Length: 400
Image (cartoon, rainbow, N blue to C red; front, side, top):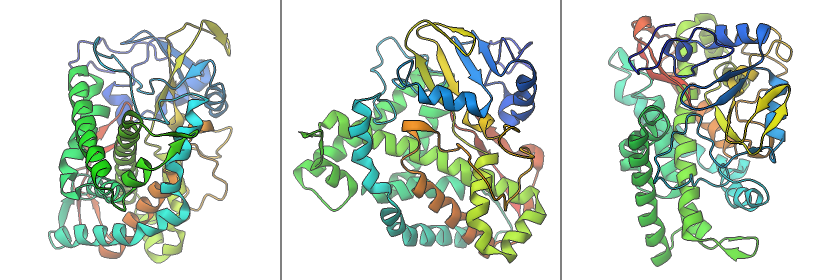
């Protein structure tokens, strides 16, 4: 592995000194996971902060199950908080039991199957409008001009905020989750923008409620108590941050796969009813999200001498490539019959918005293949992947 200008030395031993921001790891982490399973299924590093990296399915599930030893107070995989930065506020993902349960109940109605279905016509129309804007050009950046345009607008539509601010939402989320990994002040700035925006939106709804989800949450209660502005703004922060980068990365990865695997692409064109099953396999193979947990006390866990304050990298993408659970794990089998993937996490923090993400991904693929059934990468070596918290293509130029 090579150094990448960050002042961090190259990795010599992935079992004892891994680096999830290494560019080769971001581009293709699978070889590292395969090697670690053979020698050390839970790796350790002191880079940036002390952390542990499991790669086995069962280990990831076991970490998720112990919410007493492993806290969700800070789910950022490389936190590096500024000394004066406030603690993360994105309930329920940043809350532990018992507070977690009320925070999760608050948002579940917005992501029920029925509620999600109500957003499908908007999503389908949005995808068609985006495609109409470039389908006659013969080439497009499928990440920047398609995948990254869908979730910001869908989440804005759900929350009842100005969809024309989608470019701001995208920039803020990238700074918070991607660029801020190595630039904490930039991440702090992005959080300030997000919280400032939603503080104004909450104040406006309290003054004049509407029919959107923010207005619905204002009238809700958690354990019999009215929701506070702090809770409400934090929940809006979660819906924006967790609902944008994760889903556009999944959509972009799916398009990348179909651009590089013509047999799968043509099969889905011929058998569109298979797309729902294919979505699950694409989620498994290209799981975008990695979360973190904080060790709450010194304790040996699975033979690892963990210290209070250590970070656990909840490596859902590696768990989904575990050969003990998934036959031929590195093969994308778009009609895989049994698929117990954990792309949406596992345990009490499993993604509450999974129904919406699946719908967006399915609709985005369906509409793309209807409009552009034949396409390929323009310059394969120019595909740019982002990683760390969320992995997915940030530049994906295709021709058709």
